[in-house]
Image (cartoon, rainbow, N blue to C red; front, top):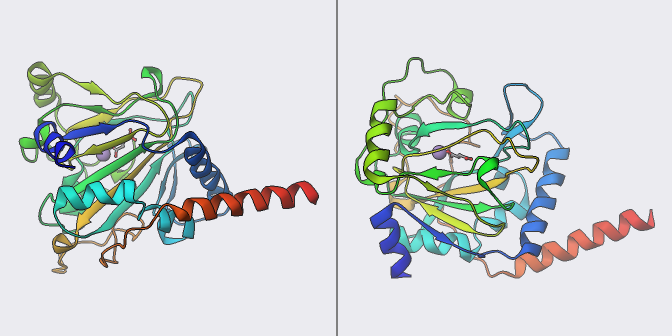
Length: 279
Ligand code: SIN
Ligand code: MN
């Protein structure tokens, strides 16, 4: 609605509490557990090569996640904010596992999609869903309110590596310490703690970070990045192509689902459990 849109435009973010039920979040988490049992492109590990850091592009390989990106609770705010039909540029689940899930330094997202993928304008929206309760010890997402109005704040990277660097704890494009000091002095910081099922909408130019998870609980965060169809990248050949699980190739506008797909998925999941029990 217009209140939500105005909030995102003014502050750079908006939090919608209890958007998904505990049962629905439970189902999503179960689907994630199933998904990582099989090898899939886009599953990325922490530097220790053991813990999963992130799952990228599961909507390309799994029907449940394909349906999820068209859930009205995720897609509708994006369409309203961008004022047109959308497709998903990027879909990731950052696992930030207990005791050791690593940090995300201060950065903005748009620079990656602009320089990495050839998207011209920051007319995208991040829609993030908390898949666990999140407190301060878990390394919540941190925002500097209104920083999205200041354009590209990133410093020239010391080195640009391959796509792996773009999602590592040593991110390619970061915001320098001096600008962060000044921005925080002026605007403060908002911590995106909350409960499983809370939704966080944020602008692609928002300055954000999150620290290491030193708690005994995982902090899984699902982030869908919607792009306006008219803002799809134009390939001029100068852009090195990142893998499809980071940078969409399919720009067909999404068709909004009803929530029925969730019921079907529940039934499937229950059926699977029954089969396991009777085996
Ligand atoms: C991000 O910067 O895209 C995600 C950070 C996080 O998962 O905390
Ligand atoms: Mn980010």
